[in-house]
Image (tube, rainbow, N blue to C red; front, top):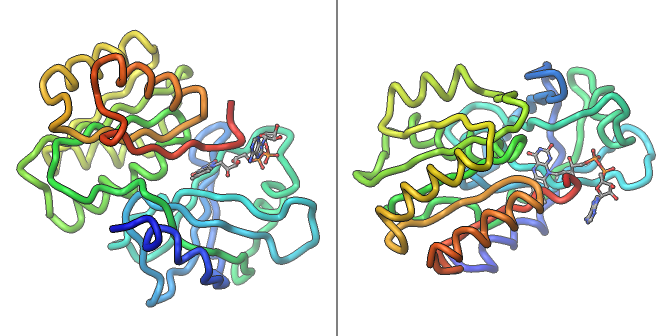
Length: 236
Ligand SMILES: Cc1cc2nc3c(=O)[nH]c(=O)nc-3n(C[C@H](O)[C@H](O)[C@H](O)COP(=O)(O)OP(=O)(O)OC[C@H]3O[C@@H](n4cnc5c(N)ncnc54)[C@H](O)[C@@H]3O)c2cc1C
């Protein structure tokens, strides 16, 4: 799949209908939307969403689609603090039947071969990986190769934890919950010493987290071409 195929859906804009929202944790909310029949994406991709029901400055943000293509709805999960941006305030005002717009989904963060895969999620960076592992579980298309998900959150606040635990029972996907960089590096060392450049490495999270782990992987002789990443702009 080439660069243009990964980004060309950005030119298609559609409106999506809000169903419900709920709190996942102290500062994360999930928003569920209807999924139109013709809406297709690859697990791990993101869309670009805009507020329609009121006029705000900067009404548009990218979000990873957290639901799998095989699920019947579109799920977004986002971090919302006590003092949210106008965009997130507007998201919290949505009532059933209201609409936001969506462009995409786009982006390169999807698994497209049978290489062993190390998925590394920092905090809210878990969203694209929920989609990826859920799709593998639903479709039963586990490759014979190893898939490990390392989920790091320094506060130990792991959204989707029950679901991920269930999923790791049903599949051969390993899920590790980590709260320190040291533990993360141990897991990365273990995986990269075993598979090195026969594996692919997928990173999602803040710029600091993604940059730090990218440098670490490069020090471990992992080639740049084997690292795919989504930098969640807007988080430090
Ligand atoms: C591919 C992708 C997927 C994402 N998926 C998710 C997701 O699933 N869940 C989630 O919660 N967030 C996700 N994000 C981040 C999301 O788009 C928002 O940026 C983030 O939620 C912060 O939004 P906000 O409205 O709270 O803060 P904002 O008010 O938008 O910004 C917070 C801070 O970031 C700075 N900032 C904002 N945009 C930029 C920029 N372009 N460059 C540099 N600094 C900037 C602002 O100046 C401000 O200081 C994703 C981002 C990308 C690129």
